[in-house]
Image (tube, rainbow, N blue to C red; front, side, top):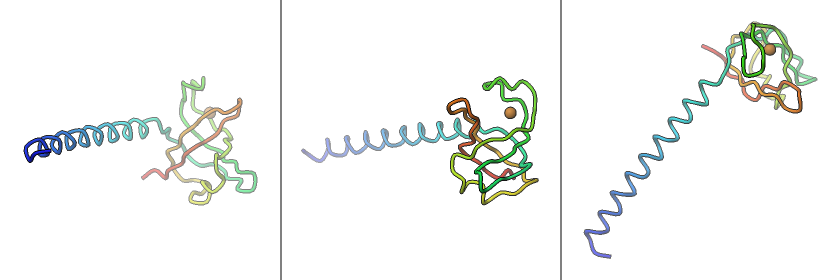
Length: 107
Ligand SMILES: [Cu+2]
């Protein structure tokens, strides 16, 4: 490999890494926007359940806001939050049961 082609392939690799970075950045933004807004009403750490008041979630056929119980995908998610906290959460349905797979404190 001579010096010139080495430089060219480095440039190409750089461009590839840059576009890969943009791709990852864009999908992170997408994932972020799927989080729903809610407020913690109640936490049952022992049962791994959380009661969340939230707005409409049309993808689950919830056309109006409601307060409902979700199972936490991982009970440790419930340690950083308390009733009254405003949150952003990722709802999902697993075997007909509503599950929250991610919780972030809203600022
Ligand atoms: Cu609901």
